[in-house]
Length: 166
Image (cartoon, rainbow, N blue to C red; front, side):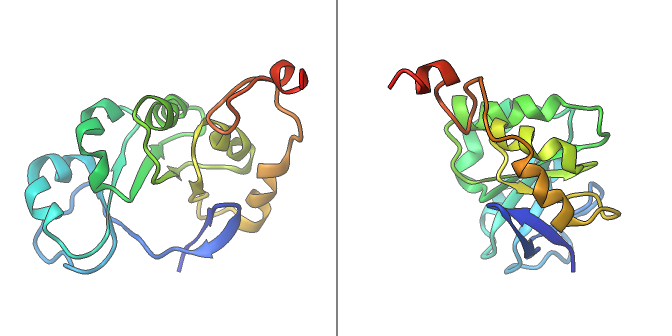
């Protein structure tokens, strides 16, 4: 069983991340599923009728604006990082938190490494599925790489100079 980092601790994964080529045939009615964007587009009505939890995952070329009207249906939004160097979903997480007010879980999936976790959390991520060849306990330490932040972000509304004026 895969282990993920969620809310600052390593836990067992309970959600099933479905591949892009999945169809509705044979999907469990009661499991918690994270479905690919295209399956949601094609079968939203049927997916909403399921008893299990529903999440969605977006590739880096799929925009959060496309699901903005449906956010209340998702307990988890997983944002895929196909490569360490592809940072487009940092903006996606920030949009979900700040523009759309999404309060559910935002999870980083794909090529997720320790060095990214601190910055991802600042953008609004609260769960991380680190690469399978990496130790999630080691990666967890990446959340504490820095003790002071200067800029405002999803995790701190005020910049440092405003916090120090008090």
